[in-house]
Structure formats: C-alpha cells, structure tokens
Amino acid sequence: SYFKEVPAEILEAARMDGAGPITQLRYLLIPLTAPGISSTALLGMILAWNETFWCINITATKSGTLALAIASFANSEGQFWAKLSAALIASVAPILFFGWITQRQLVRGLTFGAVK
Image (cartoon, rainbow, N blue to C red; front, side, top):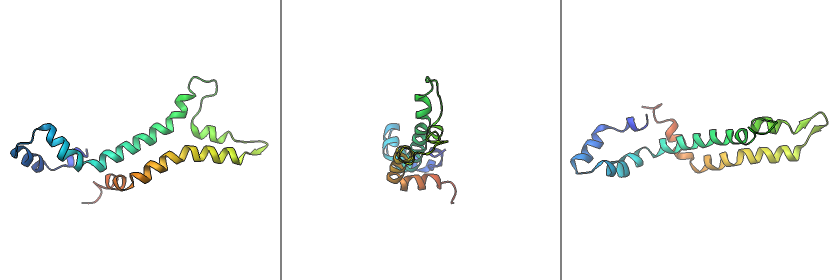
C-alpha cells in the first residue's frame, strides 16, 4: 500500500525523461518509500524475533515461547532476579536497538496515511 501512495505523475514524468523501470525503482520508488520499507522490515524483525525461541524449542519436550521461558524463572522458592533480568535484557535489547536506529523511518512509515 505504501507504493500505491506514490503519485503516478512522478512516475509518468520519469518515463517522459527516459527512465526505465529499473531506474524508476532505484531512483524514485525506493527513496520515496524508504520509511514504509524500513517500518515493515522492523515490524517483521520484531515478529521473527518473538517467534525464534518458539521455533528453537518446537522439537524439545518442553515447548513454549519466550514469555513462558522468562516466566519459568519464578517458582515456589522465589524469583531468580539475575536470570530473569538477563533473559529480559536479551529478549528486548535487539528490538530496542533496531527501533532506535530506525526511529525516524518507523514513525514516518506508521503515520504516513494517518495525516493528510
């Protein structure tokens, strides 16, 4: 849908200037849709990261998601704060890092169709 938001007049002007399909893609479409591409990539990475631990454990006898693994650090004897903190940081750090790097494109991509 982000590619559909690019005005047809821009592509038509590029065609009239002699730009082929690859040139239009490289010099027009990708720079104009970079926020949408980056926000889609970031959200895809977040979803893939959340499913990684489930996929790793699918063949094991104890299958579960990352949230279940983190919750297992609390048992009847108490909570193991060091293991719990390490697991939470390991699960959240990559998402925060990539979100911080792509913050401008993410905000621009998520709010593109909301404000006219």
